[in-house]
Image (tube, one colour):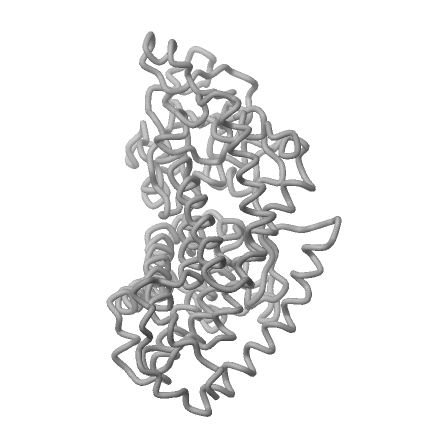
Length: 468
């Protein structure tokens, strides 16, 4: 069928596949380096316990056959190896059927990880990677032109991603309608980046322009994705520029990078103006792609209804395979930044004037003289959960488990931190947690005190605690 493929988009497919492979590589590397203290056999929320209270239908994963830390590590590092091979172009060096299997392998492995990841993997970019990765299985390799229906599904995904995020803002916090949310967002976002303070200190009229531009990009531009070229290309380019703006202003794991990747095959690349010869797709491939695409469009009815619903949910999966999902972020913006500061002491009895020493996290604000760092697209899972913890009135269960690990001097847990004031051999006797209000230092305060942050004590979050 001549209409089945669009060979003029071969360059768009090429950059999309390479970009997706790079994101997969980062995701598997994040899993390999952090899983043991988080969801390992002795982790804060052990995967074996989760598997014991859920079913195949609720959370399909290869680890239902067997789970061990060694097996998980093998899965994660295998994912890294396959992703690196895909990044190097291995899928174009094998037959079409083998290429599809090669793209299917990281999807199965990462689905198995996400479905036992619990609260550590409860973010929209996990489902986004799985939905995008499944579409990549159908996209083919150099043997065939990119299937038109898969290119459409990628645009449909990008539309839901952007339009859903725009709607959740307009339906959520009134500051988005008043164009004032960015007065606060750069300072109170989960993990600021090295330029976030400069963004926060921009004049307020600039923040209003930022908010207005966000609404245009997310509520109007997505409809242009389905128009003829070159309009669709310009719409995708606007989205790419917006995502790059977000990348330099904060740390949102691979969310923004993956959004850029999804937008790339929409663009009519100048190098693709003269399409490669399309030998035609095999019948089995056409039947497979059309059948699966029809199934995905049928599953899309739930996310589509969610977009039109007044009770719009964000970052929700409608099936355990994460094939078609709904997305959105920052439907509400916090006005004040709170941080939980964890401290320990070796004193026999804890007193207010004891020698309390603070644990420092890699990305979460702590030491007021240490400026934010750039970590994205790498994802610091513990640091992100610490931001949500500060919004909670009481400690979460995983946090009490973290305190226990620190009191034990657990080496794997300490590796998640930037600095521990106590070596593993001599852990503290007591640990406490206090809640502080943080704000970016003004230019004058930065010059006078050399600090990036200014903080003030709010209340005790966890009283002095020791191992029983």
